[in-house]
Length: 362
Length: 76
Image (cartoon, rainbow over all chains, first blue to last red; front, side, top):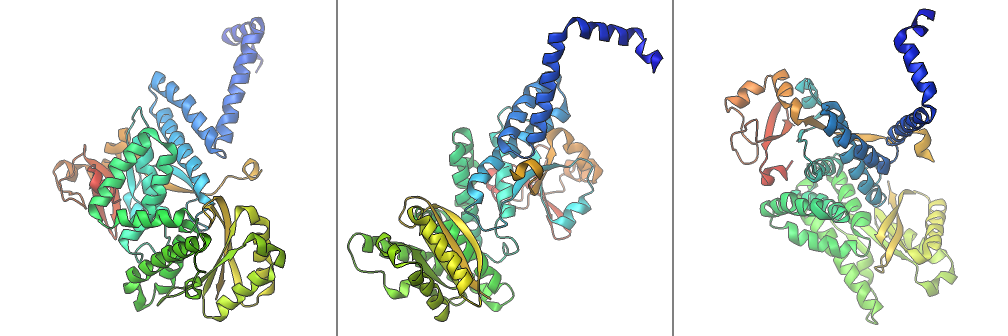
């Protein structure tokens, strides 16, 4: 040890450090900052993007493949996860966790056959838009409709993924949006002529917070119910029924708001061959003073009438009241369970931000 | 403050980096068949080449491939 400390190179290094204290302090600080960013980047998508911005120029300058791969991984992962974080709260629980990129090199393909996951080629491009679009699309496709992807009618499965993918791409804008529209959306429409119509219908539901909250959840749960029955072959009609009901409900609600007739009692419930659910809207401001009981009773009545699921929707202005309704219904009603509370991008009146909950009977 | 203490659960997308593609294909005895034009795109049926290969997809017990045609890529 003593010999090492007296080595000319070590002695020179120590002398150099002692004679340039500020420089070394700054270098140490920069190193610590990099280590901090590197560590925190695993938890915060925005810092992952920052990490990629540090790695990319270094990798280009040094021509190091491993750093370039790490930079691409951080860039795609950071951007995809940042966008997913915004949309995840609207999606059914368990869909679209954080994305990671797993590099394969010498991997034995028998593993891939066993786990069923595809391997995507990633090119070292200056602009990461291509990698973002390809990997994001692959990830969304693998994350939607777990276990039911083979039963859900293909056009709806594709359109649902495209709808969320397009929202993510539009949120990023610029080249990503153009690339998504040209390389993913357009070719998909060429294959399935129904997709534009589905996207239009989804937009109608989405503007009232009923696409991710009700339609996607009901689609998944209905497919799950039908999975091991002969009804799985009639899912297209059932899905169309759910979609039509959502549109009719919104149209009736709008008519009522503009002074028209009340929503017909039959529209509060949908009784399909597989999917039987009801909708409860909380709350008309003047009725809030009546307390939570009327709404809890509506949930109870819906189940008594044969609904297997009840979707409760609350507007942003009455979020606390809607939460109380859900809590009281959960505690008061026997034999039903609260599947999950969810957020909606818009409330049922069309204003930004809403909330809701899904109850089910087992 | 969850992120301070615990990494979030991630689901991964498998990817092969451009420079590792040939090594990966050779390691799995796929390089020669591709050079010989044995593999075809599972969607459009065109012959897969090293340049056009974009995705390797496990289908049942066999390996299929997708070319870089946007129409085919959008179906992965």
